Image 1 (cartoon, rainbow, N blue to C red):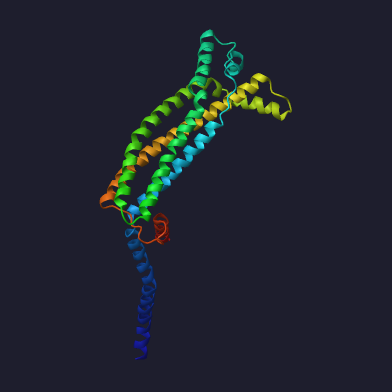
Image 2: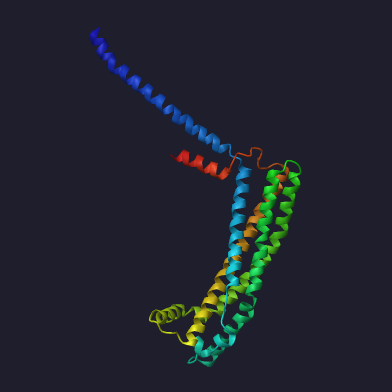
Length: 280
């Protein structure tokens, strides 16, 4: 009997250790399955609404920043900048001089003269996301007439899509023309910076033509960069509104976010926490 018990003891120890290990791993399995069930139970309409709101806020901020920076464009006088000596083409051929000077004058006619107008248009388009976010918050707080709010948001998006599309195309054409017109100045940007700040660092006053050329380059850079940034924001807003029209029309009938629990919090943050917990 002692020999039998000694032979059975290792087997009993193995069975007991397996039982303990399975009992210890059981909470992990149940926890992971609970996480998967929680992820599957995510309120997807609410997630899409929060993604749309984040995109609208982002493009609105970019449009406001672009409008503000366009208002800061301060080019030198057209007669001061558009000279062969200032632009560095005084020894070039007559055809090249005429081309560069025509581009410089065109830069003033199509861009510098309308920077405040461009800034105002960007600021007005930044109001569209603000109105959309206001309608989304109104739908979240209401208990009666929610379908009308979603329908109004879809209608506003349908009106905004063609406006944003044609405006972005127009601004893209202007931005391309500005890039072509400022090419003679931007081609020498490194030499302009080196000469200007080199003289500043050596405590020497830059000559007038270099001061004018530097101001012209900075004005060109601001105008081109923030025209392009505002144009991309308009295109992004157009894409978001296409998505929002479909989402709001679906919310009118069946695919509606559940805002009944005021303490539910952000669905995207909850989903991220669940995904991180699942990875761990």
